[in-house]
Length: 302
Image (cartoon, rainbow, N blue to C red; front, side):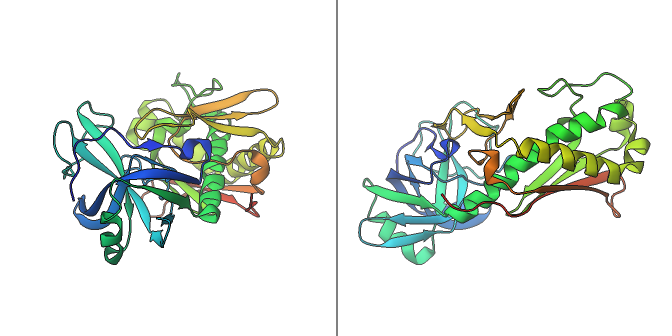
């Protein structure tokens, strides 16, 4: 079953919403960048998808309820349709937010459940996110942001030239050198590439590399001091189109940390247990350094 061109899916997960209703607009098999996936699209959803442009946080999982039967949702994907056309997923991703493209969330389901969803096109259904998985990913994602600010502060001494600054006025090591990141349910792994361009930009790679253990200990102490404040965390705006710009904000007692972010987060730092940060140098790629941020004893429940 096909549908006419749609606007971006409206997402409610920035507000922390885990259960919401949405109208089914499409159901069927979709080619998602070379993989055929059975699923459905709604006008609004609380599900956070895997971002194909920066795939750091895995998608939510959960279920959909049609009033009679519960169907598992295995994952959430971003698909794109062109303006003025019937829904035809594009084989290649356009630029983020490209004019004339609609960015939609496809809720993946088992192929055998597809006929059930096709019969629901045009009707409202209830969408519910797996709370425990969301909470774990959100806690680790929040901890990773705290790590980035603390890492920027600790590494400021290695800059021999002026550099772009983060929201606290420190040289932004994180955004200057980040190569890739993966957020798991207990640990985030951020990989930084410090090659020729880093040296040309005035960063003292050798001194940084010799201090990895001390840097990890210092950053660990800093993030746990912040964690112990129990500060509130917000994503603004709380509801917006999928590709809308959103800002993560953590209101500490004496300052507010903020940066652009499209992921999910805890409501307060009281939901995060002790954090441990470790830095290691890759044995295979000597110009790459991994920072692991592990959350221990996180709080699950609401």
